[in-house]
Amino acid sequence: MEPVPGIFTSSTATTDWAPDPGVPGTEVHVMCEADGVAAGMTRMTEAGEPFEWTPQQRETILVLEGRVRIELDGGSVLDLGPGDMASLRPGIGTRWFVTVPFKEMWVIAGG
Image (cartoon, rainbow, N blue to C red; front, side, top):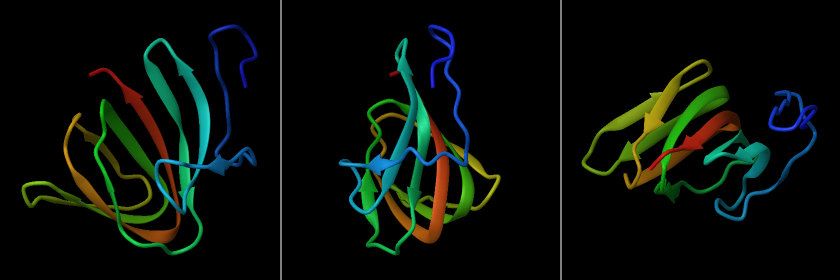
């Protein structure tokens, strides 16, 4: 929602979800895409296969519900649950193992 030009609001309880074409089996809620920044949420309600993701820009996430194990290229692992945050650099290969139900808030910005 954009109550004032350039000001965006949303809620973690939103019902405005759409299939995410970039990650099969997930849904996305985009709060805003403006000024080189995108922000929103992703959720997964049914167990799916692990998926690979390589962010093209800096991506920062906050886990709201569920758990995720993110394996990074090079061998490091992030184990995240509700309240945990991570920031991924552009170009890092990742493999995500999600425990459902899962919901994250994300911000993608920069290069």
